[in-house]
Image (cartoon, rainbow, N blue to C red):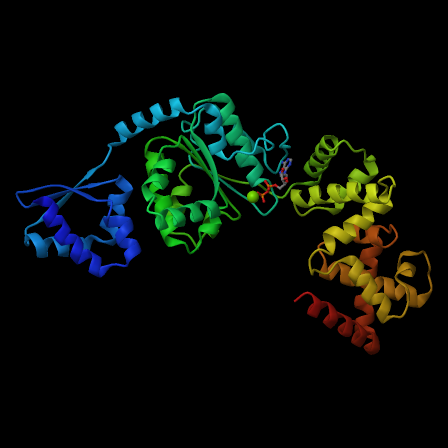
Length: 446
Ligand code: ADP
Ligand code: MG
């Protein structure tokens, strides 16, 4: 009987919903009984029932009332209660061999703590990660939220923590997933009616690592299921580690309730590496690539390449490639060439090289003369103008700017900027020249 009642309800519900939603959320429901005005339905899991309550409550209630009368109450039972669920899964895991488990974790064993260089910029994050590895789920760092700019080591650290957890807790069920992959898995689960498998997979983990959560922006349904998985894991004292390219307070494209949970544990920033850390990282990359660089070159690269660690790596790779192709040693000359070509010209930003070329063309001299010791007036002026704009339009320090002009020191750069300002005040033609040039740079930097 209850089956007929339920089929009656389904017929009404079907008219209200799109096929996909109907198939996903209502087809898997099994009617269990109907007595004393209570219709009992069996749903695959807790998430399922919460989703229905949140999205389809009205449709479901209306249909039940139409078929069974106004006093009808709907009750749910969940297919396997969580305890049984876990038991079943443990048995399953015993049957699988550990290789399959490690394959499933998606961890990259090349990213570990041994080759993650520590420094002022990342000490806290590393220490938190290491304590978590010893007692996943049972430290104050749950969830651990790691944030920092691109190329700052978030992905590396996530894998390092995951690998360490696996080392110290062999049976820890662990998975690394980028938020994009999580989203596409969710969508495909929705399409293929496998939502239950999808949520079970994540809800049965002991450790979940989610990379780049900022990509969940605007994906409401994915955020919703992630929220439920998060809650489920958190309630069961499972470890969650997430990364993002910005701090929680700037994650305003995500649902507030989700972001507020990210802050329950520890939030740490991976900062831009300082000079000493950049040097340490460079040395580690050099030795693992088995190449030799002089201290002078290491200093030069660490000084000039100050954006992020990925860019540092890029430089090493290019240097190796260049020295192989050109069959020459890696000397300072080659290093400078590679840095100016690969790093600074890779985007449209204005760099010193560009400024020197533009100013040299404008004053009809050669760029090389700017770097020479020539003291002829028109060359001195062009050189000073180029320094003046380098200070305005790049992030280089005075010392670095001086380096680009034939190794002059920072006081020469300060003097150049002052002279240019003085001339702007006293010489109208010069002032027009400067405005002309300034326009060129402003347009280029748009
Ligand atoms: P993000 O995920 O923050 O964009 P990644 O983790 O992908 O950055 O790091 C970029 C590259 O820099 C990777 O190859 C990584 O191994 C390397 N890297 C980042 N931080 C460090 C570090 N502290 N020590 C050694 N290598 C690092
Ligand atoms: Mg990353």
